[in-house]
Image 1 (tube, rainbow, N blue to C red):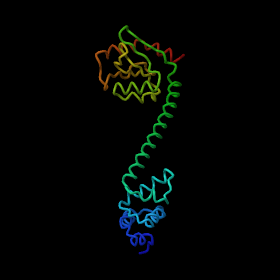
Image 2: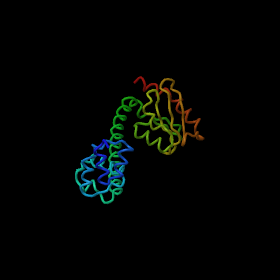
Image 3: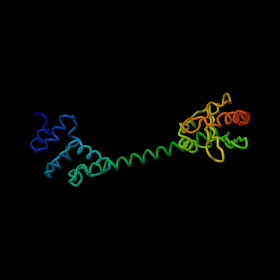
Image 4: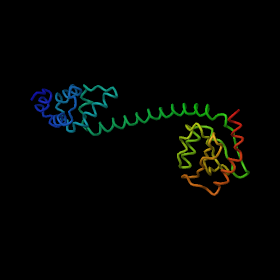
Length: 216
């Protein structure tokens, strides 16, 4: 046997680690110091894949991988799963922070791009249509209306408005800033409500107000 480390594993009775090393072709050197701790303490590695993952997680969290307390757990699965959960929670926190940073950036870009339209409101004494004035508001609109408007803040040639009756969302309206026509107006789950045509007529009859904001 040419690989002395694999030979040592067999002699020490670490058959599962030996099989895993052969099958997966892992770099044993990366784990060798921790393996030696296991051998020295008479700890049998019953699940080599899980144990190697444990060692990688221990390293990630800055734990001492030369310490029997960490690399020779009484309950390998429990110790492994605890670190996996900890890592998943860490990843989620990192993603949440990335989302927060992205939202701040998106809000600045949206204000710069569409701020001139903020405050625009049209009404026919029943339906009220107003410009959506933030990315967070747009995402909420998409969530409550069950459609994909949440990402429409990135559309440079579109203005997004919300049509309501007595404060209740009815349809979300997209207007082209080139033609000043309604591109689409969608209710919950992309449906057309009984007010659909009336909403489009209300918006397009006030297109000149949008046009004036463009040149302001």
